Image (cartoon, rainbow, N blue to C red; front, side, top):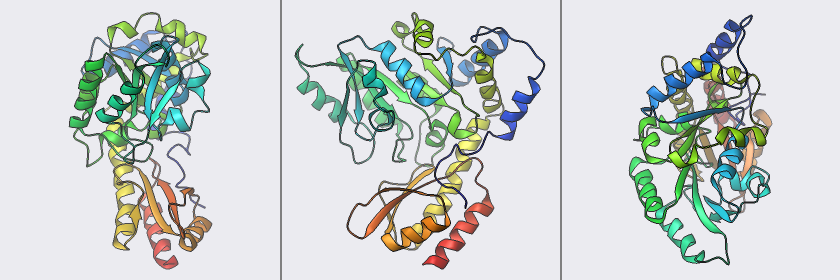
Length: 341
């Protein structure tokens, strides 16, 4: 049974594996202090156009978010997110466990807007409630939508107006950037956020993310926070090496385009048959709404995730394409889907 459940269900892209294999027999200093890690760091800085950035490697998205957010916030401060945001729904209260409230707002698009920030600030005006300080967004979002440059510019302007910091979760940044609906570049993100992370795990890495800190005030003592949160890896060079592969010949961006292309082929067959979506399908996550019986039949043939039942008689299924999804996988799905209809 082929799985469209997620984009991290195979070990790693062959070029990532090759880089790791090439390191066999070599010796490195620990905790990301080695020259190899530093060279990869410099390469990423050049690619994003920010030589002044601080980069730190992590082995997963939740520990990246937890470490970054808890480092930024003072004890009385909180982070703003949409109600579908990863830190609000899929991290087991990791942020709250560090003593910081996640203030959520409802957003049908999965994206945060300046009006959401304004509404929260109007309710948190004095010392009797937590002080909103950090704004958290994801690109692509948890429901597969992507930010446009104008939207990110508007968010950054609103943050600057109120002295807030802007943090982008980039677990699926490759897919978000390479969406046909996106006019953002990674250089734009490096100019319009105070920190963001580049997700590797969901685009072909074995397990690796790299946090990019841009705001000068956030850089100090960050390695202390990494160590305290249990995220400082002795074999830090293993994390960096994966980005050596992903950022050579723009493989990261090539794979982002690839997963989106495979997703759009699935979107096309759903649209042709008259089915709608929970949110506009703009990246490699598709949230299609199907009659319950058809959804059940499809789930008997493929590993899929049922998200919700928006209305009586229908189910919303999530399909997620991966760097390992082949054209044959897509063609077979389309054929099976037509037969089930």
